[in-house]
Image (cartoon, rainbow, N blue to C red; front, side):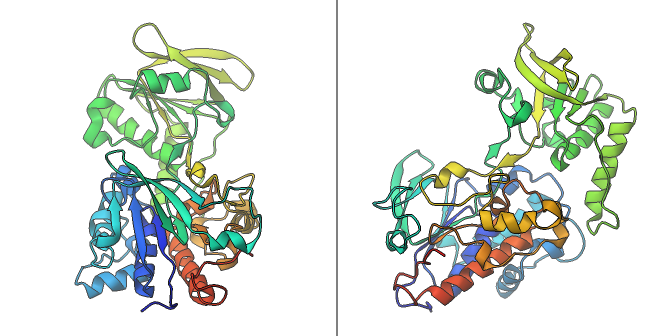
Length: 423
């Protein structure tokens, strides 16, 4: 049963771990909802890196709400300290959640929410007033055939994640000269996802690959490509690192052993002599373009200004990614100038050891940090952390509980529609 006479219509954007948790919560509270997923299958982003093993074990990968509901349906839910791959998480948990009778009819696969606005209002109108909350959200929706339509909601939960827009290859986070043309004119020459070298090894074997990036994704790719080079002669990997002296230091007494193992392996690769792998430090990509022999010429610039041309077959840019912020460009969302996360949450995160605290120490920072100037609009899950990389899935589940707590508390107090007034 609904908690209000006129429960809010909820639009949930993204059917990943957080979006599915939100759908479960909405169903349990009796709220009408629609779960939009741009991919042709549930949890499309997770499937994209399905071959990669998580750092976190099963006990940290399934929410109590999901575990209890699946158990009711007779679905065996994994537990313990084994770390699943992304594909295993989808197969064993997320796909089963999407198939629940309370979710399946409300799940719209192959449906992308392109933009969200307020009916009858522009971004600069009714600043900080309750009037915006009296208007429904207007969602521009595009289906798998490219047809567009407008749908409405009273509450929007943006759970679309932080994988939408890969960071640029060039120095300073902007595209290097020639980068955009390369992506357009030579598809496949520049990749932004961790390759599955077991499945797609032929696309990488025997090639010279420039790997750019130093984070966990780049470390994973460096390890996997080095293994490929070891068993497929002619494969050459150039690992370019921006810092002159990169540090690959595991967290002491790390509660996630798989993470420490990866960091240790990356450190060994960066320090040692690995056949087929060359590590270059203290340099950035200055420009890219055709080499004249069908390959890609990359201009590398050292910290002292010296430049060197390197010809490669493929570039693997694992420099991070961000969520799609253009999605809510017409809404009044207060974002952090440094992390692009919602301001209140970003400030709370930055207050913890400068934003560098270990993800295992993370908990949700309270419902008040999730509220935006735009009433009824919430960024949840990894997208809410912006460029802060310490997000853990359980934080998304806690955020969902807090938002639905707000809806329950404020749903009938100020207006029958259940829309939350701005702070």
